[in-house]
Length: 109
Length: 115
Image (cartoon, rainbow over all chains, first blue to last red; front, side, top):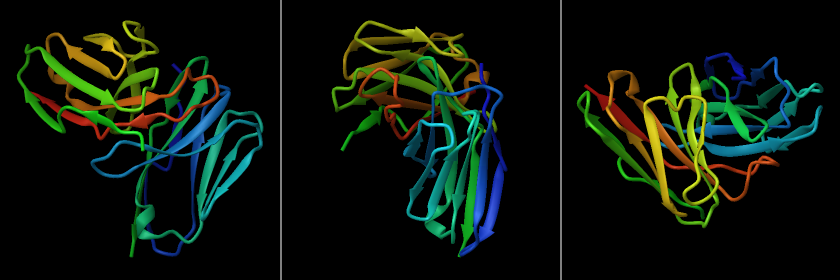
């Protein structure tokens, strides 16, 4: 089983700060997804990246897929309380997605 | 909007009981999945199905079985619940076979406590 490690596991920051979440593996993935999960809900897809080195922006969120397609990062600029949640990366290999261990983000107003 | 519903949000069962978790999706998706979510471990795939009456084992199928008699419904069965099956169970569906990273749509989850 390919294990995707996310860091940090927990992050608590003030509104307006910037942050980066990392997703690392020793395995190569054909694509990688980021999800956000709010308390009491299931994960919701934010983005899919498929090409090594690819960068995608979604408003204040920037996602990057590593050149070797083994890792990814999520950068949030000027975090807001609405960004609070559990962030999960998921890498596709073969016919199955493998999920990361998760990063729990709290943005304090 | 795609909707994935799960039969219960919270469930309390006793060790040894047979437990049924039901999942229904309303968008005619071919693929359906059952995951369990535990702190620090992320989501782990139990079983998935890409067609009616078809099933494939995921990473942690031991102690679980599944049933897909209709396209829209995917059931997870714990034949004899044990305390180590206390967890959050998430159902998901997707439109097509996961070749290009199609979106998985998740239900709200069932939090199961086995006493």
